[in-house]
Structure formats: structure tokens, C-alpha cells
Image (cartoon, rainbow, N blue to C red):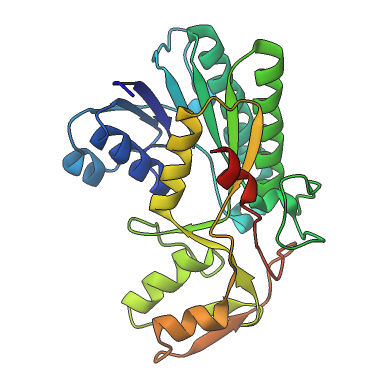
Length: 281
């Protein structure tokens, strides 16, 4: 495939920055739109990436970043902050998504790939969990990701915008932002390990998560953009859960463990069925 003009919203974040870098390495022209562009990204970026600082909730009428592919990753994440600030999460994750969809329709974008989340399944009744499982969001973050995903599919049907949504499990890898004790497990454990601190575990060690390396997530985004598929939702994960006990065993537990109360609405297991993505992407 020849050179493609790409827009990555949220390209200053964890997954978005890896995606922008990979697209540039493949020879594509890349534009990053983010409310916060760390200097470290600007300084280490390869050629082919142009950064624009902006807020997806407040796109001006003259905002015109024409592109062939739009990868929409700009969002607020994490459970506890969403419970404390549900309106803010709705503004960024839902209104921001609709603004980007409108932008894509107006400029004739050839494909939009949306970063959704397997958190929309809530506490699934079946494992591994298929895309056909009912949505049952248990906290505002998950709700906003689901509503935004529905908007993406709606814009695809009504405005004939080619769209794909990727429901991502728990991504990890270089560049993860450290979170508080109630953040995503990898974002919590790795900084604690690096700083010789005890691990904070919410619940117990029997819980398991479907971890996926960030490079594999990036690959799924690019395959979705390159494909002729539209109007589809795909799980993106490793397809294999790992218990927190096993994860700590691999990392080493020389600094001990501190147990915290379990977060509301959080499943004991995440395990995505990825057979559809393997078959169609």
C-alpha cells in the first residue's frame, strides 16, 4: 500500500503514541491531535509526524485535518475517576467522539477505527467472551465507551462512513503512564516494581486479566484500517487470561503485597474471544 495520510487522536497517549510511531515507520504521513503532547514525544518522534494540540470536545468550525484514515483513541480512562466525574467522561468520550465522526464525514475520510474497550461487557456470563455478548457497563467509563461505540456504528450506517471498532482488553508495554493504587493492573504493578514498592492488589490473586502487548494492539489498528471491513466490532486481546498471582510470580514479589477493597462492578476475569479478528482482519 502507498503512502496514506493518517490522523491519530489521542496520539500523545500510551497506545496512540505507539500507533503514530509505527504508521510513520511504515512511510505514512501522520498527524497527531491531543490535548497534551509530552515534550518527550515531540523530541523522539521520527519524521512524518506532525503534532497538533487540541481538545476533541471543542473543535473549531474551521478545524480541517484532512486524512484518509482516522484512528480515534482520544479518551479519558480508568474506573474510579469516571465515577467521580461522569459528566466530564461523557463530554470527552462521547461528545468528543461525535465531533470526530462529524469531522470525518465532512472531509470524506476513507476509514475510521475507534478504540473501544472490553469493559463494556461488564461481568460477562460466558468466557471467552464473544463480540455478540450483551453490553452491561458497570461504571461511567465503560458506559461512555459503549455509547461512543454505538455512535461510531450509527455514523457508519447513516452517513456511510467506513468504520471499525476495536474492543481492547488490558494493554501493556513501554510508555504506560503510572496510575494510583486503583489504576489498571499493569500501570500499577510495573512502577511499583521499578520503585521497590509492594504491589497493591484490589481483591485477591485469583483474578485474571487478558493482557495484550501494545505492539499487537497497534497491529490490529493498522490491519483494521487496511481491510475492506466496515461496520464491524472486534475484540483485541491475547485470547488467554493470566492470574494476578501468576503475574506477580513472574515479576517477583520481594517487596510484598498490599490488598485493597475490590472496585465496584469489576469482573474477576477478562478473557476475550479473538477468533473473529483472526478470521476477518
